[in-house]
Length: 281
Image (cartoon, rainbow, N blue to C red; front, side, top):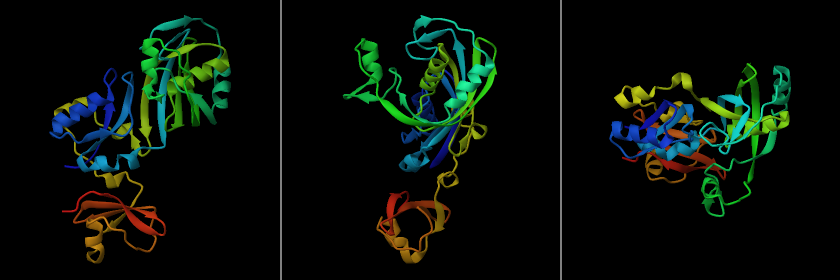
């Protein structure tokens, strides 16, 4: 039993919790996910089961889409409502002002990583320094904001949609936007509505996951790979993970035989080399 499950993660549970539920239901330890969601966040969490875990890195999307809700007037140490308030200050700003600044952030820029994150500095996770009160300068990473749209604003709460590159912290994006506006606020809700080809509309509920009310989806539905029937003349080489020569058909090839995913090959150095052998029986 191999494949993908798209789960609509609930609030107040970790991504690991969801993996553990799937593992118990499917009676296998070989379950992983392709992108962590914080406990406060809901939405798309992609699980890979058994042999699908071998290709998780190919399913990790470069772009993700979120809807975030922000409460103005205070900021916490974690930049979300789970943290401790460290400053309170309210500034009256208009819809037009917010919309103008938001449009400026559709760009590529160096984003300072939140201090409460799992990014490692000098061999330790940033949140470990934060919890122990040890001063540390967070690193910056290049991120791209592809699209931003202000959806609602009532003077206290604002809601916006964002499409961003892999590795973007929405908490930090909110901080940066509000800094530009000369005010402060805290993320109170976050929902991931898509991750590459995976959309929340296709996701199952946590209840369905717990009840085993779902079917696994083949990785071939989501891989950016050309699906090729494994012919007998190269079958032995492919099953044993040997390089092969083919006329160029794409960067990645997924070989299938009798409707079974057999192996993934990658085009490299003018030939195809094995990326992962999924089934050599």
